[in-house]
Image (cartoon, rainbow, N blue to C red):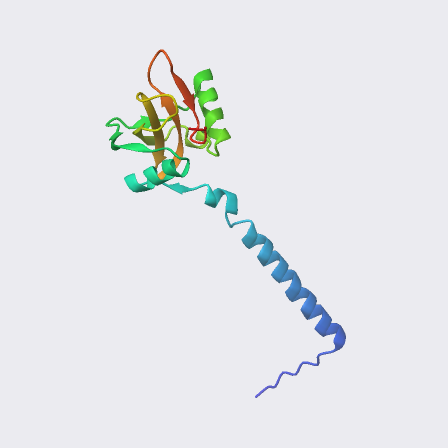
Length: 157
């Protein structure tokens, strides 16, 4: 039977501590680079149910009619954008969304009738774009040709 002995000198102890500290620093650095930042996690807004979508609109003060419309046709965010899409995405970016991450993806459009838009009694909609149960964009808009507009959810009601 062999017995292995190891004499720990202060120099060797310091070397071991230094090596373990280095390994710990590398592990923490690696792990922190693979954890999603809190901003992107908090930006995920669950919108898979009617109640969640209505609650989101209500958080901005928008009241909605009882009915909503889920478009039968699924929408695909185009791969290539013209100036209209670029301008629309600017509205999305200003309210914390960015559709450029969804180019080529299929999304569902939910349309709610807004009942409390200041100065308008009808024709005001809240459109919500949802991909895999997550709200990725949308707007408040007036569908009439005469007074048409399109603004973010956070515009004053």
